[in-house]
Amino acid sequence: QPQMMQEQAGAREGERRNAQYDARRAEIVDLAARLFASKGYAATGIRDIGEAARLARGALYYYIDSKESLLSEIHDAVLVSLLAQTERVMAVNVGPTAKLRLISEILLRLIIERKDYVWVFLHEYRFLTDERRERFDAKLARFEDLITELFAAGAKRGEYDIDDARTAMLAFVGMHNYTYQWVNVAMPTDPVKLSKIYCDIFFNGVSASRPAFSMASGPASVTRGGADGRP
Image 1 (spheres, rainbow, N blue to C red):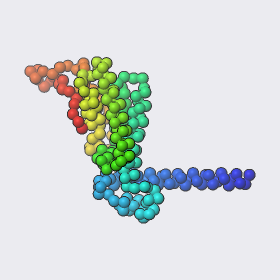
Image 2 (cartoon, one colour):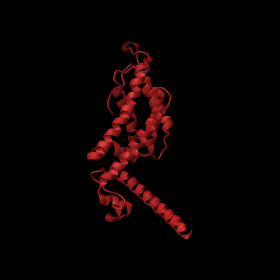
Image 3 (cartoon, rainbow, N blue to C red):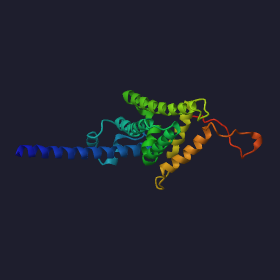
Image 4 (cartoon, helix red, strand yellow):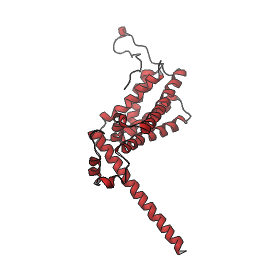
């Protein structure tokens, strides 16, 4: 009985230490994201990260493998979560537009709540190398394929008037991605309300039922322009 109690106490202590380690490590990843977003990945050194975390170089390496491993974790924090939530939406029994609206909310919540992470995700992925870059490319391609699939399904059902589902996907994602450039964390933005604005603008533009535009009819008419363009 005493031995069992000692083992249980040891297990609890181990769990406590693991929790402290994980919390400190997460803090370091947050600090790295902030530094990479403000200074750029290339201009940020290990010393900068150590100073921000108040850790000597040796102590910092207790928590991380390398600067690039931090970059990879930041990208995973964005992409793994985004992909997992998108795949759950794909399994919901609703139409393409409803799914895209749900994904829009997911994207905007991520962008608004993790602005530094998203900046790094969008700008610094080129510094990922070898297997890390391959994993990133594969996950991003999977996410883009899912969105493209929804636009293709909507076009097939006659809901969208588009010729190129991939271009529509790029326009849709691009409209969301660069929200980080203007959103102000000091003034809370509701991702649900913002998503409705974005989606109303976008889907009114690609809707197969929208009225045609005539140059002779004047500015009150609604344009029938396509939804193409890379972000």
